[in-house]
Amino acid sequence: MSWFLRFLVALGVDLFDFTIGRFLFVAPFSGEIIGIVIGYALFGPKAFWYLLEALDPTEQLDGFIPTATLIALAARNDERFA
Image (cartoon, rainbow, N blue to C red):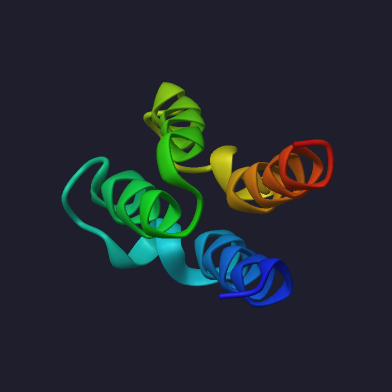
C-alpha cells in the first residue's frame, strides 16, 4: 500500500477521534486500542506512540492531537531517508 493511502487512513482515524470517537466508546481506552491496532497494521511498531493518547483519561484533549497523522508523517520521513 502506498504511503499516501496509509496517510489517508491515518487522517480518517484522527478525524473520527476528533469528531465522534470520544463519545462513541463507552469502555475507557477502547478508542486508543483501535487506533493502535489500525496504526500497527499501517506503520508497524511506530504505532505504539498512539499510546500517548491514553494519558488523557477524559477523552477530551486527545482528539485535538492528530497522533495517527503525526505517525504517518514520521513514517514517510523514515521511508524517504532509509
